[in-house]
Length: 197
Ligand SMILES: Nc1ncnc2c1ncn2[C@@H]1O[C@H](COP(=O)(O)OP(=O)(O)OP(=O)(O)O)[C@@H](O)[C@H]1O
Ligand SMILES: O=C(O)c1ccc[n+]([C@@H]2O[C@H](COP(=O)([O-])O)[C@@H](O)[C@H]2O)c1
Image (cartoon, rainbow, N blue to C red; front, top):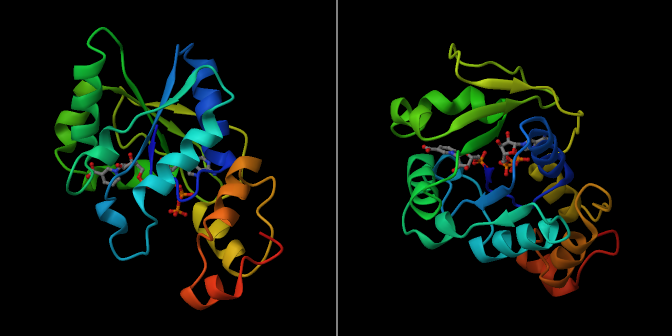
């Protein structure tokens, strides 16, 4: 499952868990983006923070792992590179790529989209507020997952406004955000972490 994970939240984790159970997957590899080019207009946290939050969030699940392939590659992150790297590292594995409904709706704008379908089986999952569509492809699977009306955007905004993110993100991620004073402006960081974070 690829994502910017800024921060990772329970919507990501539930989606991954549901796809793993439905397709009887041995492992779910979370792949934090290096430079998410379609989010270039927004303020994205350092990739090492996003990678570490993903490690913390997935550590307790023996089937969840985290890959650095996108974090360690220079330049914009393209899924075509992610899948080629993962295939090289796991030549005997069948790859599935998990995407929420919003990401699936954008997929035709991704680099080398015509080649993506041969590298992995794409699974689109439902997400509140978005319509799930297989983009006219019979080889894309669609899966309804428990509705989690959570977004990283909302989590960042809650931290900035001193509202709690407990139970939206794993406890360790709440603590990581507070420790590193993520999602606060420079002046807010000087004042200290809001109590609600
Ligand atoms: N609540 C959710 N339910 C199902 N899928 C989700 C949910 N949140 C994110 N996803 C999917 O997880 C993947 C990674 O998402 P991403 O890291 O961009 O999170 P996000 O919450 O959409 O972030 P942002 O609000 O910053 O855009 C995408 O495929 C996205 O569609
Ligand atoms: O390949 C592309 O051009 C491309 C464009 C936008 C997003 N993606 C991938 O889609 C996944 C979700 O991205 P995001 O930005 O919604 O967190 C992540 O793995 C990205 O690398 C990929």
